[in-house]
Image (cartoon, rainbow, N blue to C red; front, side, top):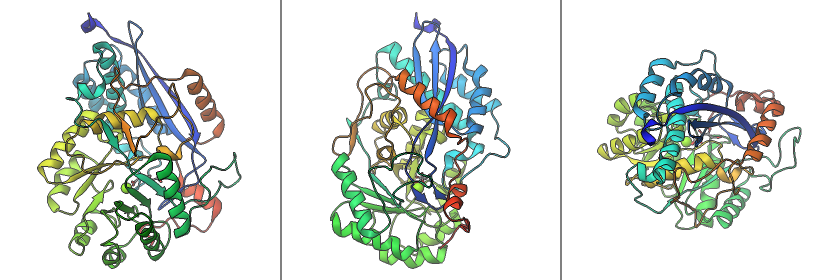
Length: 424
Ligand code: GKR
Ligand code: MG
């Protein structure tokens, strides 16, 4: 019976949700983060969902890909991928961020495949009465650990478009420790990452030292998003040696990371120099990085992430997971795939604590001791709240943001901000 089911409709709904004034190497987050909610509806009225990037070029390619998925069975994942890769091309003129690989339009086909694949797996799970993780070979863990993802931040956005968030300012070492304390009290995380590349390295190292003293025994990471020169990264390495579990993308490029690797005992991690299977081919062999941060949204989906995990095992690389601003549908997809990967060696990143709004029934997903329990209900295990979807879509229509642009936003605070990379 279910073999005859076909995908009869595709709905793409862009949404905008409140996001904090979070600082990074490129600048600062805008008050609204964009995502797109993808719905695939079958001829018998079932709806499979996924969450992906909501920038204009992404919405355009999703629209172009519409005809490629309609008429397929939810089980036709390989045919869907074949069609998308044959048809979808990079978007000329898209705003791209070195630090956010999901913004690279060269990854358009992989991003579309991922968004269709998750929704199709959701449908498969509903049809078979199985959670997605079972379709991926079953869970090797019942709950997936995430890390406390700290950001330098201002207390509120320029122009105060809405009431400030509850996190306050996060600039000094004491404020960063307070931010970590609040996040750990609320979510129970057992490892900590600080987004760096914002201030002078000495200040960021002082923050790491303050975290090390405040949370003895908790694994720590620092991610300057390639905003430190090779010389700066080498000079900082001995000071970071005892503080970090891994040193994430301090310096630009594979060659820079390979050179740095010769000067530090710390494992280097990346979501910047190896972001595609092609880059993996040359990158893994250099020995430059020891930990890879996967992300199903731009690598091409949950099954590609499993392939990546096998490659990491083969090349002896540790695995963690990258994140951008996202809501619960993405968190669930991340949780299903992470639960299926035996060699997930580090707690995953998630921006989720920075998001206040939700688009799923039941509201925000709960964390227990820093982990998200793997759903046992069919499919993704979460359903759309249509009222909330309509509200977040209305926010999209009125917010005016159409492409993430942290650099332009930073220049509103500081017109002289260079945006140069590496800046330190
Ligand atoms: O959202 O500001 C941010 C992050 O800096 C993000 O863009 C990065 O892609 O979190 C990411 C990372 O680990 O590099
Ligand atoms: Mg990173």
